[in-house]
Image (cartoon, rainbow, N blue to C red):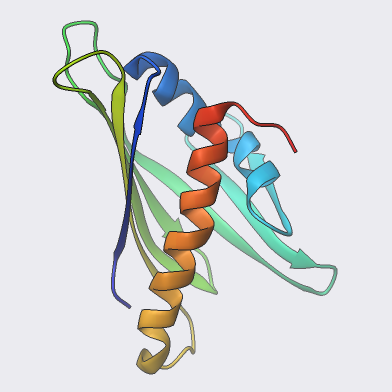
Length: 145
């Protein structure tokens, strides 16, 4: 499936933008029909999407974790999707905005849904951009449902 990319600018300093976009449990409040459970030790989490028996688990492992540094270096996080239904990866980067205060956030993701024909790749990427773009906007704004 094709990867998609969502990019936003925020008036938040990079450390605060990073804190908000990597607060995994808050993601559930902004992704429809989803709950998130962070695994003990914080090296991964499982998102569960759906209702009752019509749901699936999307376990993710954090394989890269580099928060933004005070010297202006970007924050980078990479998640590997390890589920039976959803595979792929996601990368989140938080950069200091140049010029000026604030930050630039880049979210890249590649989703592969087991059994879904390649013909659904573009619609899946389009839906991913919409869903995760809205979630990112809400996380950065500090919105609560």
